[in-house]
Length: 335
Ligand SMILES: [Zn+2]
Ligand SMILES: [Zn+2]
Image (spheres, rainbow, N blue to C red):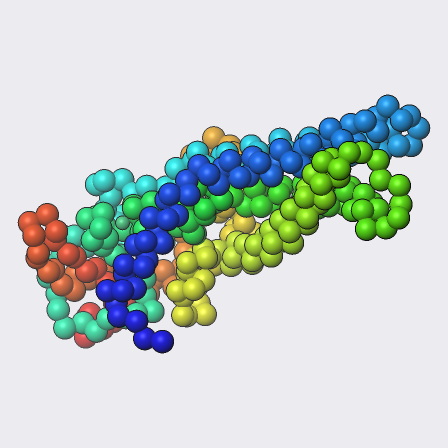
């Protein structure tokens, strides 16, 4: 069904406003699910089993240690995503030119026209809403109302954008959530089966209801997070964000440097930091891609997109200069 652009724009605006309004309610919802699960697993099931002695006691101890370890990692990753700025564009950001390769500053080059646009080549774009140039892989988030470096998506569960600086933390949050919810599902499964059979079920009705709710919630989260996790593993392997996966049309992706380097660009090179939401100082110093502004690309594809040519300058309001900088191959320029 055809809908006018004005109506669509209005609906999108309403949608973004609704997402902003959700805000901290989602954090409370996550903590609520954690609370219900904690009550069912620790306080009513495996905590009391510690006093049973024998094999039951050992099983309960193993479950409780695993549950608490994963919960600490899950919450650490979760709040790291929530409170880490996904990556903002510095106010005076300009594209960096490699002077050794004879590249000129695109912003000072004379105006050039008559060169056909090359849609397959990356380009420096301008965000009209933020009134600034966009670095490579940067996108404007309508919910946050700002440009986000290497934006992946806006996540309502973490009330934040997932971008260059918190993508690893988001992946770890998915990873630990999957492990924790799977553990809880397996641990509560015997009680869930007993719930539908004639077996003996200890505890008050309210305790049974909480256990039932915790099982259903954790099973649902485990299955849905598994789908997300598989999708993001394939995205990391190809060095692509969710937005880029939808946008890219060419099979030659310039940032795909091979699985190992693609993985390191998100998780860093120091193995000690791969499973915690942090980076080593060494990685932060040596890897500019962790800052979200510069990304290494394939040398052959890299060479295709220089020099930058200023194709047109449209002047609107004094502060609203719309610049269009497109990458075009060197040969058509010289012809
Ligand atoms: Zn913007
Ligand atoms: Zn956002």
